[in-house]
Length: 318
Image (cartoon, rainbow, N blue to C red; front, side, top):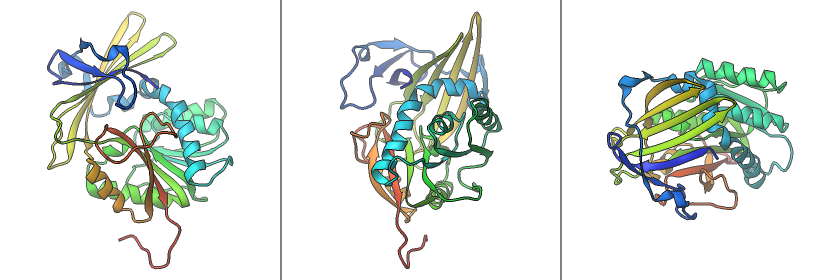
């Protein structure tokens, strides 16, 4: 997993926050979990701020999430063997919002057929270049999650969208379109995997996470704040501050955006909007095939495993 310095709750303007290790309360807490620490408040006037800075810098984005890749790769292949009957054969994999292409590379290296798209042209260029540089096959193109078109070919065994990326779709109509498109992209018996953080509207604490990535002489420190959700609009404001350190040079970039919120009830309601999909399992961001969970508020991160139903006469999407 990435070097998660902690997940904290506290107002971003406050200097004191409490770190919680790990997200899953069933696991033993680290000895580092109890102290309070000082973190920088997200002041936009000290950095380059935009809605896309985090995504316009694919290398830094890739460094922060790189340590997730082995666990996610094992999870995708393992969950397909368990719930999609794929055995050990190569998979056909679709990744909406593929970002820097880290999972495209990882799965392609293992012999799987990988296709992915992203709305950010910098991420797409980075993903294409990494596949080309490694001599790997894969298709990567610019497209949006709720209106994408697929290249000709057989349907996929699995479509996946992890680390809350699905929450960028901030309207119910867009989320429903995207989920139905993902369902249509996989074969009957194929899987759709969604990983996201659930929202507890009763919790009035704001969230904080700190991650560190290193590569060669480059270090990236990522601070992410999630602000109190607007339940009526189902929106939560987000802010990431990246501190990029190379030698004696330091640069700071801020990214601000909105996420759509999902309570357990709202997530179930979304899944019901794609009647071709059935819920077969839930896991969490540890990507442990031996550990399942329910759609509830026991802790926030969840990966839902949805399987496309076999065709039945008379069933149509409403």
